[in-house]
Image: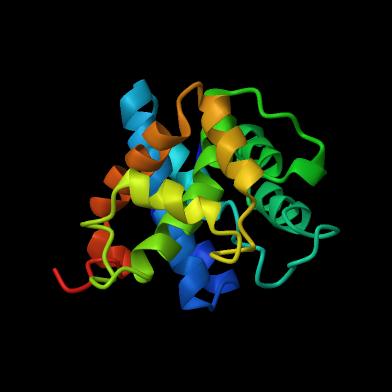
Length: 189
């Protein structure tokens, strides 16, 4: 049996003190849950994976440890293999190919949710509510903007979902708007 979202949140909160990393987990969760609804998949299962995908990053930020240490902890706590496999698949260097729709969606939403957050926060409104996909694509062309985000990962994530980059950005924005207050992205609206 899969642990509950409350269990997952408690684990994330125990291992992650950074407000920005917690909000990143919530943003990825919002995006992945939105895609689960779109695809007719189990929103709670998909959301749980998204919420936990980086829960070990604060303690173990190196590729030698993340997400491997976190997955060890999840196994110890009885999380099913499909959860750990999806989490491992979001890191290219983990060597776990993305095969399932969940794995492809987690990868696609991880970097895009971070990029959408950055794009929203530099707007005069500091809000995701008036952010459009075209603005995200324009920001992608500026190599200095959110330089830690791989543009190739953004493009490859959308391609893995079989949709255009613009459609993917628009979807993630729409899904994150649903949680604007929780994400601190309501801004001046």
